[in-house]
Length: 489
Image 1: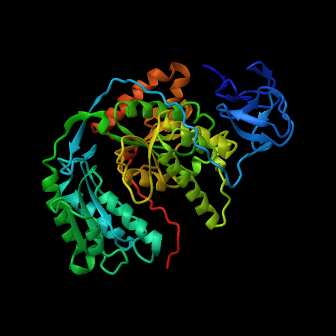
Image 2: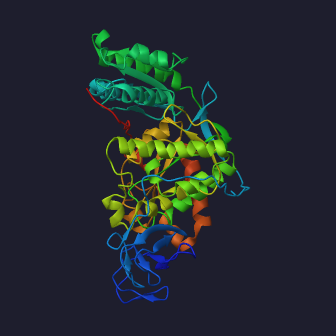
């Protein structure tokens, strides 16, 4: 196996693919320090103030002279980024690819959407009834099980009351998007009765619904909310049991792209592999969604140049600048990233992280930008507003309409969202040590190459769409987190 890699011919650093010892000779230079897997070393002498180049782009500048073979990291470089940037649209040529499409077996919904799961959900309007939601699910499972559909789940959260303005509206919006998600064959909306997120107003905001599949219960209005809730679930389940999978083209899928706990191999193995999948499914007529706006900072101009037209470019500029304004309104440094875990894994600056992170988007054009109030409606690659936080980002991505999420990780995490969340390891050691969390080992590209692993990844995604449970589903790690920006009363 290769021990080092130069990602781009323009780079003046190489990355260690395994732990390297001082005085070893790699890429024609003698190492000055031990280099931990995922970390960088200089390929030549670099003067103080000179750019550090990785992925063919500057990721930092040297704060002191760096010798060839020396470790390049936070101790001798700093970000080039500043608070305000001027963006110019220089449309990039994006390749047009021809691919062999695949078939998936999905559930067709009355409104024309498709789902890859047929699950029964309990969604509280307010955190005060979280325990009741869980008890209703437990009692239903005890009495009836879930034969004929894919499971019954309560998605609890701490919000729905004592919120003001934007936070209150976002809570309502995320929950209403979940109620209408096509992976849910049926939903019980569970309210308390006195909360800000009033069940009657929430119901009205949903618009036209199928009353056989979406039902409401206000706990303060019944004598036994557990018994009433179980009965309503029974009624919904009796309808869902008739749902059958039908064959459709893979282009019907909407796939979210996310990374968390990144390391120095994220931008070398897992993220580029996911980018190849994004290009594949877009070429097949499908949809992918990239979010985590703060992890676009430093690579945003590359995404802007891939905008399909000037109108879309302006949307990308707004996406980036609005999120920078959010940081500044709260007195925070725009570029306070990467995390300690990222740095331990070899990621040095936000540019380093973002240039690796955005590789999940592949090389195709940006078709649209989706803000807080919207669903993903356009085929192709979409950018979605939202933070980098794993739980909030996956919730946002799924709520925008994605059927599943591809989640690359170099450090590992058990987390999963309310849709299947496929964990893709950046390295083989993680895939082996946390096999109970990891669905796919992208570290294998270092041995067998991208083409072979892309076919295997497509196979896994087809199997998952057809009903094979992701590890987060097997482990019952299915959670939501609603992004909050304002005041709580």
